Every structure is written in C-alpha cells, then in structure tokens.
Length: 202
Image 1 (tube, rainbow, N blue to C red):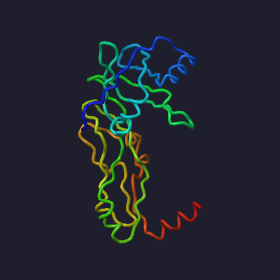
Image 2 (tube, one colour):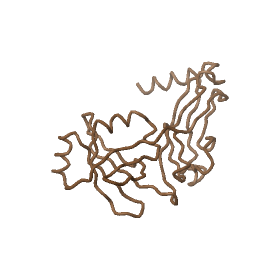
Image 3 (cartoon, rainbow, N blue to C red):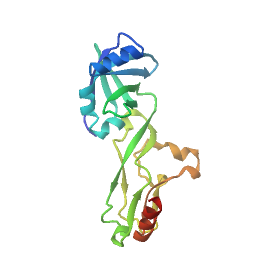
Image 4 (tube, one colour):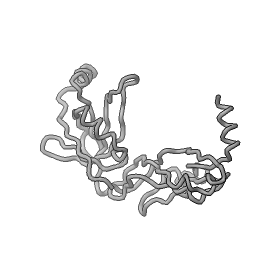
C-alpha cells in the first residue's frame, strides 16, 4: 500500500450554483463530506493539488485524509464530477469511514503475465472485460488493486470474478447476487476471432 493521501480543505461558507461557479473561477473545487453518523459538511479544495493527487490511481481505492480546520476526517472518494469538455473537476464527494462499518469501493484490476500466458504464446489475443471491481470490506482491509494473473490462460479460456484472488475479509459484491453475476474479467481469443470482431465493429 502507498502512504496516506492528505487533502487540505477549508469549510465552505456558502452554497448554491452561484457560489460553486465563483469557487471554480478561483481554481477551487466544492466538495462534500458525508456519512459516518455525522452531518454533511461542505468543504473547498485546491484544484491543482487535487489534480496532482489524482494522477495516482490508488487515490480511488484508498482511505484518504481530509484535513478541515483543526480536525482530520478519514474518507473514501465516492464521487468525482468533471466538466464535459474542459479538464476541470467540478465537484467531489467524500464518504467518511470508521473502524466498525464496511465500505464499498471500486478497486482497479492489474493484469499480469499477459505476454507469457499460454494462449498468447499460441497467437491468442487478450481482451479485458472489466477494469475494476466493486468490493466490500473494512477500511483496513481495502486493497489498492486486485491482481489478475493470465499466465495459465489458454486460447478460448476466461477468468471470471469468482477466479479472482482477493485478500481475506474482502468480498466481491457482484458474486453475492448469484452465479449469473459471475462476469468474465478477461479472456484470450484466437487471433482470427479477434480480427473478425474488429472488422464487425468497423
């Protein structure tokens, strides 16, 4: 796990669309802290500092620290709104976490050993069906990512959610809804099938 991510924030003194626009013009991001048995609190963050932190994908699957005035809040990033056409973050949602309640987080998948997999050596092509997976766990069990090992996957074979090796205490939420939700995570197709699929897409 990487070290803690700390976001410096100020209390938001006003609300409404007009105030939000004013903050964005000042290179600030309006945000909200909620959950954890406490009232929601509006805060303001520095846009440039946030963008820098978001360059690390672990921010999205990590317990973060938001420092507000004289206290620190342990949170996870639950929502991120971006401008539709400009590289601007317009709003953020942070959910407080505690040591007694499970959290639900989308954790990125890291695919390893693709180049040396059995199927690729035979000319197969790897396809990724998912890039992340939603899990439930206590905050101290939250994995930074889940590794998907493709070394032994042959042409025509797939890895499903139930095949993922997740840490103890971490549950893949989709699997709680029955075997029909055991979605494929990645597969290796024959080169000819992959080429045919690309031709249809065009």
